[in-house]
Length: 454
Image (cartoon, helix red, strand yellow):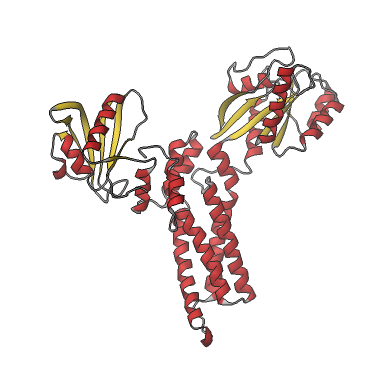
């Protein structure tokens, strides 16, 4: 168990050699501990949100010249006294300063402990705290926007307000139960239905946004598949604008999968070039084909390539039928459209192929547009409310179910004790989302995924 009264310390910048590094210190004794090793102004006498130049010393030994920023509670990230030490970025310097601060009474912070304290001190709700972790790990502009929006309150502040209103109605219904024999009604059922509809209307789009949110946060594993020499490696190279995969006329050149990532309109796609699908007696190529099939079964999206210059109509029909058993979304791509026969092109158009010429890099923009349209049901607007967290999605879904039962129960005239039970469940799930209801196990699981120093 963590002692939330300890003063904690950790590097806030990544390990390695750099021009500068930042060390964080937070807790009731943070300023006092820092002042024992700092030679410059007396940190105990300075104002909050000020920066001071001086040196860190162990007795008379100078470890480094630093800038120290002082933040006094409750006006800090954690809500506690906090100090940030900006020193030179030598790993030796960082290690020596942290060792010295630990000697003076601090302890090394656990992963995410600074943000955990911000949550416990009501500086952030739990959904906002999780958004801090999402922001740190964001790899695209869109994922950054979504994380920042949620970190600044997003949907959780609205849900907290609605939960408070729901608590009011719950207390009135509970009061009714105490006067059960007198047949009184303190909670106006029309007002409760109105609030229930308001919450349901707010959370339904959030639930529906999760598929897109998951794509924004985690990216899309995309398999490029097809027969040998269909142009899979050529397409990968064209999409990446780099000679990432070996291209050859010899069938079976790709024996294992090759991966690389590109970002299209803020969405990360992990493209996987795979071994060509065919019958073979070559043991190594056979292993590559088996891996291709495994990857196709796990993929979110498959670009299935056809060599339109050499395919027959019957062969294409057979391949299309074989794809129907897969769970992934599939885009049929007709390659070498620039040299294909008219009959083949006609068949491809009738079956909604995206026609390209990968070697000549023709129509790749149309393919990218189709990839985005297939993954996203609608345009993602900057600043929109989007759920990217599976825990939030589950809490919202269960809240929706509980509130739907509340509404149905009131309309069908069920007793107040059953209505109260469903309201309590809705309050529980909303409380889990925002952090009004937590367990040590839940907090430990969430903050253990943070880096040390955040």
